[in-house]
Amino acid sequence: MTANLGDVKTTITHPATTTHGRLTEAERETAGIREGLIRIAVGLEAFNDIRDDLARGAP
Image (tube, rainbow, N blue to C red; front, side, top):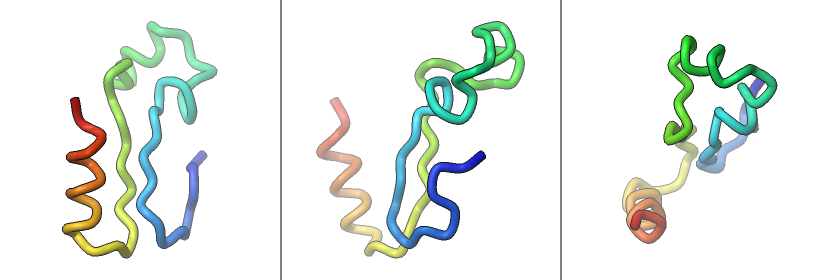
């Protein structure tokens, strides 16, 4: 399962509640999918745009 296969935009997903959301917590832990994990699929935007977007979203 994938969020946006073939898209040209950068996407960020939270596997614990999306792609692996149907697994139990123990199954996710075994698979290495922890609550704080995010997946970033980098698109075609300029590096500086992606970096700046991530910096704005970071606490």
